[in-house]
Amino acid sequence: MSLLSVSSTTPLLDRVRDPSDLRVLSDDELLCLAGELRSETINLVSETGGHLGSSLGVIELTVAIHAVFDTPRDKLIWDVGHQCYPHKLLTGRRAAMRALRKKGGPSGFTRRTESEHDPFGAAHSSTSISAGLGFAVARDFGADIGDVVCVIGDGAMSAGMAFEAINNAGALGRRIYVILNDNAMSISPPTGALSTHLGKLAAPLRSGQEDGSSAAITSLFEQLGFSYHGPVDGHDLKGLLATLRGLRQDADGPVLLHAVTRKGAGYVHAEQAADKLHGVTPFDIATGAQAKPRATGPSFTKVFANALIAEAECDPRIVAITAAMAGGTGIDMFARAFPERSFDVGIAEQHAVTFAAGLAAGGMRPFCTIYSTFLQRAYDQIVHDVALQGLPVRFAIDRAGLVGADGPTHAGAFDIGYLANLPGFTVMAASDDTELMHMVATAAAHDAGPIAFRYPRGEGSGIDLPAKGSILPIGRGRVVETGSTVALLSFGTRLGQCLAARQSLAERGISVTVADARFAKPLDTALIDELVSNHRLLVTIEEGATGGFGALVLHYLAGRGMLDGRCGVRTMTLPDSFIAQAAPDEMYATARLNADHIEQLVVGTLARTGREGQPPLSYTGPERPSPGSRRIAAE
Ligand SMILES: Cc1ncc(C[n+]2csc(CCOP(=O)(O)OP(=O)(O)O)c2C)c(N)n1
Ligand SMILES: CC(=O)[C@@H](O)[C@H](O)COP(=O)(O)O
Ligand SMILES: [Mg+2]
Image (cartoon, rainbow, N blue to C red):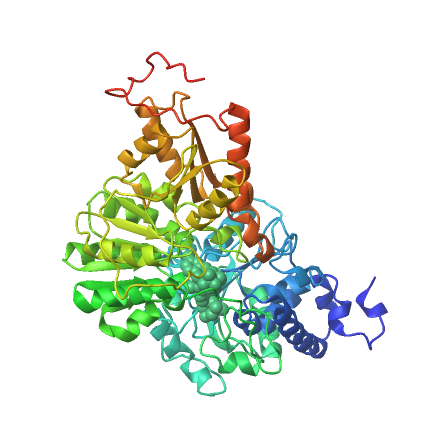
């Protein structure tokens, strides 16, 4: 149905079925559409929660880009993708967006599988220019691709990867549009010299001078082979339309358009908020008041921050590093206590890790505090600069395990595997908030090499927290509850679920020991030996992908010839299906490994192996049978 055929009293947004519909609207109608789109975005996110501030900041940019360019043949790539809600509303997903970040609903970021208007997935920042350049070169090799437009924020632009792409694009000279969405915000105010440079470029515009031209300063980007345009007002829709139409006409190489925007633009409570309502729960539009999820106690993040502050008060060598996630990691709390010992390096995880390595080599005690998923970006630095040099960097790994609404791109599922296989690494997981405090203390005191401790998104109990953590013996786990038939060996906060499963298994007459491994490296082999020797079934549980803690336990037992059937061994890890699906909020509770999963596995295994109720076979021989030796008839 042609857009024009619908009565003009129908809101424009109701008439847009596809971005191509924007190209038959007048500039005035597009202006109206932008207003409707902003209201729709506010209404939507007030119901669903999500990333509000960044989406409101790109309303005019989204309308202008879709009015001038012709997606999906033209490729529009949103960096991070957290600002893509208006884009999704205009690209056929308006109805679906009511189920944003829910089971079966759209992701909170762009996803290739979701729409042809999402040519490249995102969520981890600073990938758009690299991907965009790939599309542009594919086009130049003959692929049926039109123009390429990458929209990247000033925060995302601070990452090394963005500059790697700029460097290459400037040299290749291919026609590509990079729109720098400069709102002078990351999640918190941006840091770094680039932010200062952009501020100087944008100053004329921000101070209200008409033309906004920053002739006085040559932009960094011009030095790197881009034709730089701007700064322009990223909320002046008609100006944007004219600029983009002109650029589309004339560009013959890499173009950078510097658009100055306001994060949270058009919604007073966002514009007035310190974080511009970057990420919100459902909220009351009139007041901006957000729904507060029921908290059982202080967040693990807060417990970590307070524990680190307590350690730092006694040790001036302790410094803290965050990669643009000061609020999310609690380093903002540390910074208030020790401003000169806190470093926000911007979205620069690779630099953060090697910076920490340098600090450690220099005799400091650095806590490199990065979400599990974002730490993935610095893996070579972890291996090459930290592990192989045996430098005592402390890694505080927040958001370990599934994180809920942010889905698979943010799942902290892999850190156990990718760290515990590294030489000299000590890898811990806190089973609760008290243990987290002990691990902070243990890490602070550990100068023997790199040490990491992981903890999930969410809250602990907050019960009986000590003022300061106690140093744990490295490589030692602990038995929490004793039983006889089954041993549950937990690594991390699934311990609580193991204790719940122990309760329900007891009602089935199955006696269960629950142990907290505390360490994935070095393993507490004495504890493992004891559990395997005195139980019919050993189950390891971890909130991580296969190939982590359980794999290490199996590897150890295999090497000792103890996988001989006398004691069944099972490992419970996050199935790929849990990790790969957008784990929406309502799935969050069940997608994580819980007591029911544990109970089902134990009962099923015992039933299958006929071990239920049999007395434990305790092996008391002088030494373990060598691998491959005659099996002891246990059945
Ligand atoms: C590699 C990586 N590190 C950290 C983050 C967390 N993160 C999400 S959005 C954001 C700030 C992005 O700032 P900017 O690009 O300026 O976008 P804005 O929110 O201002 O629109 C950060 C740090 C991420 N998504 N990816
Ligand atoms: C878009 C992004 O990557 C961050 O905003 C992330 O969503 C923060 O996650 P938390 O809400 O767990 O801090
Ligand atoms: Mg920004």
